[in-house]
Image (cartoon, rainbow, N blue to C red; front, side, top):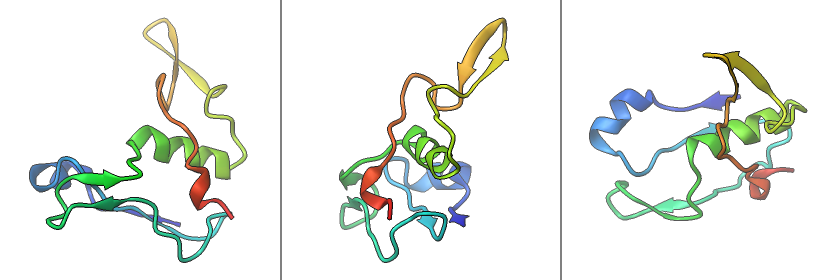
Length: 92
């Protein structure tokens, strides 16, 4: 299960840190990965980009994010672009 706020609304107030809640599917329960400053504005510890979240979710589904491509504009594109690493610290 993935639960997260709408990033478009979130970006108006907190552009440098966001919260995502994951449960089941190979995610270690009770794990906190990363932290923000006292105002929740900037990520200050174990920063993860949205591409990292996508790479981790695809990994949990058994899909190699570096091999998953789709053709767009005559080019093979990846969901995680050229970025994205699996966040292994949250895996069970």
